[in-house]
Image 1 (tube, one colour):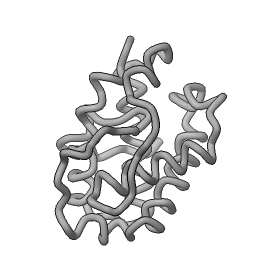
Image 2 (cartoon, helix red, strand yellow):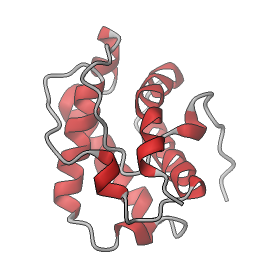
Image 3 (cartoon, one colour):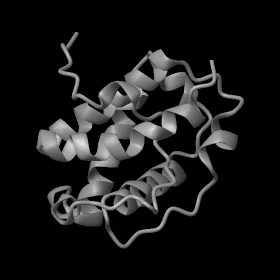
Image 4 (cartoon, helix red, strand yellow):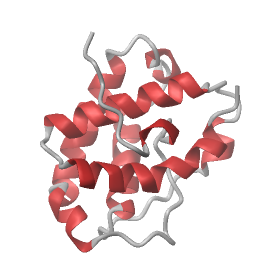
Length: 144
C-alpha cells in the first residue's frame, strides 16, 4: 500500500467534500493552477474513481448519483478556489447527518483527494490551500 505524505492541514479535511465557502478568499493563482473549471472537473473525475476503488470508504457512495456528485464537487472546488462557479447543493450537516461518517473515513477521503491532485501535478501549496478551505466542514460531516 502506498505511504501517504500528510499535508499539514490534511487530517481535518473533507468527506462529501461539499462546502459552504463563499466567504473564503482564494489566492488568485490557485484556480488557474488547478486548470480552471475543466482541470478541476478532471481532478474530481479521477478523485471519484480513487474513492470508488477505496474499500475503506466506497460504501458511503454506493447509492450516490455519481454524475451529480461529480458536478457538485466540481462546482464546489471551483468556487472554493475563486472561480466563477457556484455550489447550490444541500448544506453539509443535513446531507451527512445519517451517514455515520467517522474521522477515519474523513481522513481516507482526504488521502484520496491528495492522490487525485498528485496525479494532476497540483503543487503541495495549492493542495494545502484547498484542504485548508475544506477542512472546517469536518464538524458538519463527521457524526460518529
